[in-house]
Amino acid sequence: MLDVDRLRDGAAVEVLLLDGFRVGEGPLREPHRHDYHELIWIRDGTGEHRIDDVRVAVEPATVTVIGRGQVHQFREARAVHGAVIRFADDALHGGDERIATGWLLAGPGGRRIAVPADGVAGVEALAAALHGETRRPADAYTPDLLRHHLSTLLLWLERWYDATRTERSDADDAAIQLHRRFARLLEEDFAAHHDARHYADALGVPAPALARALSRLTGRTTKELVLDRVMVEAARLLRHTDLTVGQIAHRVGFDDQLYFSRAFKRHSGRAPQAFRAAARGAEVHAPVRPVHSA
Image (cartoon, rainbow, N blue to C red; front, side, top):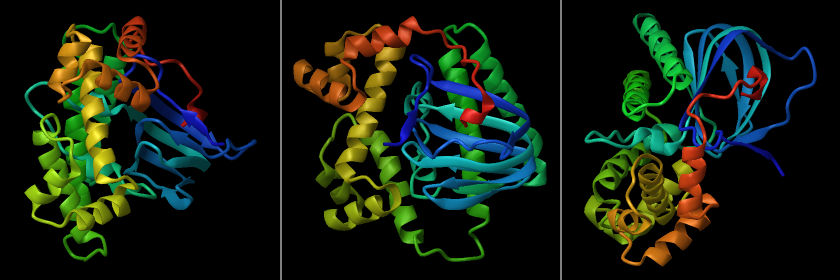
């Protein structure tokens, strides 16, 4: 069984700053899964890590994207400076604005995105801002500030990723575009429609074709992706509002509170009230942990 790294109870975002980070001079940590998304910003330094058993070089001015559930191992790192940014799904959702960058975090192997010279200072500033927010006592502004910083960083990464694809074709181009359309529609309809057929019909594609494209990119079925989004919203409401469990169940499209509670527990491992208690009982500060746990 692979070890599973998790965010500390109650934390939506954790940031570790890398200052001369090294791997390879002693025993290597075994491959492990992440129960969160991770962005590894490399300002300078070299090395190698493996994501879903795919070799990914550590190179200056890059961000490596590791989606939740992917298997990661740092094999080697030499004089690495930068940051590791970890975040839960619900850190991205809330307020009146939503972004649909789920496709960027999905798929096997992870992605390494080159940061252009004029983008380096911005990434550095956002990493520092996120780190600062996770180190200060939480207040009413904290969730929105974390969300906006993360959203900006992910949108920049999407822009830079797309810029590298303008001169070439990719075997998964059609599937990626369909996934993006699905992600945008899901943001609009997840509370009202939990059935996979609705999304296939709205996108104008056969349900099996949608399922194949999403499964190839994410390893998950259409229904699983819809349920994931529903439960992300439920977790956000439990964490950040005083709505009752019944009110939250209604907000995310469940008529039966008991059925919602059972579904939430199956998905998250905790009943809604237990999840809320754990989230509110923990401080927002990122834990001080050895950098080698990345």
